[in-house]
Image 1 (cartoon, rainbow, N blue to C red):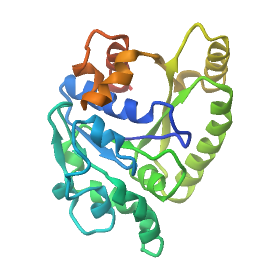
Image 2 (cartoon, helix red, strand yellow):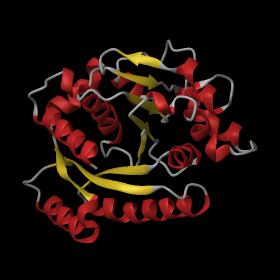
Image 3 (cartoon, helix red, strand yellow):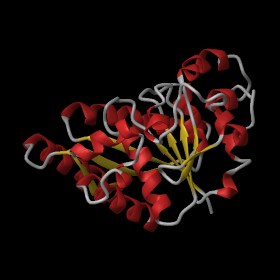
Amino acid sequence: MTKILAITNQKGGVGKTTTSVNLAASLAASGRRVLLVDLDPQANATMGSGINKQTIKVTIYHVLLKQAQLQHARVASVQGKYDLIPANRDLAGAEVEMVDFEQRETRLKTALEKVEQEYDYILIDCPPALNLLTLNGLCAAHAVMIPMQCEYYALEGLSDLVNTIKRVRAHFNPVLKIEGLLRTMFDPRNILAQQVSEQLQKHFGDKVYRTVIPRNVRLAEAPGFGLPVLYHDEQSKGAQAYLELAKEVLSA
């Protein structure tokens, strides 16, 4: 059965897109059929997958506005060995254009139903905001992965996101659950990071992934080459961490 995972956090700069791209590549490397949906107008997941956002003609924007079938927007990420529904700046206007549409919250869900059976995993890279695009991602998903840095403000934002997920579950998507919290950009020398990490484990227990994503130069470099870190430097700590995360996801 296909698993659809929304990767989301309304706070920017927490490693959400890095996680989307590198988890997709790591799952694909394990032999799974993977589709990554870029739902962020910044289109960083598109660029990080080796696809030039300036030259693509059909994107997730056209799919959400029902101007194109999802199959026609799909491209292969040769670098990542997975399929991608790309995005570009056009997506920023989708929210305004969709405001008066019927069933505007479930447009992505409806579009994915036509290709769902072709994949083992569908990952949705949501924008860093609790907006209509993120709502589409949450309505389409079976579960949510929340990447977060271990810092004070992250805990504050987490409660807002958890409440949003509860509301989506109550009104739109009763199967939605929190798959797990992923600690990213982790520096074990930072005492605050250790304290926040302990608090997360205390409050969320086994909802916190055992895998911790470290601060890693190779992880930061890889998007500049349009590559997942696995194919930039497989032996790096970042690549090995995402391979471990993929194992956890597969065993869930």
